[in-house]
Amino acid sequence: MRNQNHTRVMTLAAALVVVSLALTARQAVAAAGTPVQIVVTVEPKHGNELPLIRQGEIVVHQGHGVRPVTGWVPATGDRAGLALAILIDDSSGISIGPQLEDIRAFLQEQAPTTLVAVGYMQNGTVFMTQDFTRDHAAAAKSVRLTQGYWGADASPYTSLSDFVKRLPTDPAIPRREVLMISSGIDPLYMGVYQDPYVDTAVHDAQCAGVVVYSIYTPSAGHFGHSFWRTYWGQNYLSQVSEETGGESYYFLGPQAPVSFSPYLDKLNHQLASQFLLTFLAEPRKKAGTEPVKITSEIHSVDLLYQDQVCVPATPE
Image (spheres, helix red, strand yellow):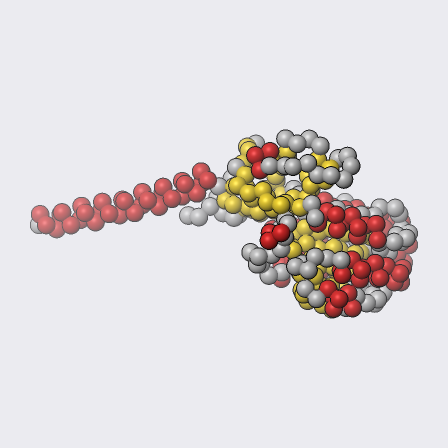
């Protein structure tokens, strides 16, 4: 009997040790936080030269607290891994035709290590004319005229959501970015203000860590010259870009841009001015998005970044 009691005590003690170790591990995770990595683009407020910004000069706010920054790496050299997709709205009008050479030239200007892809947004998905490749000439050849009719007219934002959900992850390619060329008009949502498809696209891109840039080009058909729809379409493009850390380059009413070239030049400059920021997000019991604010002690720069991040639940 004494031996049995001793065995029960030892078993209980071992169980308590296991529980204690598990609790300690959970507490350690909670104290340290959950690593989150996002792309930050740095722009000088004056001139074109970027000042040196060190990791200790970057501050990340999550909620009411400041979170530890564990990485601030310029996206250059062996850390420059970039997968860049150009997604063109297939319902765009004929005014996009003169811009195709600008798009082709932009693709061929990318760094040799950059993976590029070309796809056309239609019917809620993306039809790829060129999957990700380092053969930039082949990608340029895959750029074609749009179909230019509203049969390809499912929301461009559902197409964007579908695309970012299917993007593969690769630690060697830490930057995944999209240039979205569209009127921004959403035929699935005929209201104004909060378009649910836009909100979903923003959420999906933020959780995938995908930065979205955009250039406006008019749609085919009636909406292509509707100031009302064009106005809101450009607002939606701007929302998607700004909330994912990118930029929307055109806002001059319903007329087509004279040239994409100035906007593509600016995008090239921004891609070369990016950093990979890693910080420890405050753990949560439930997975979800958390608003973040990033500031720098160097006040001569602006920082572009996604305004929310997806934080997984703390392990049980």
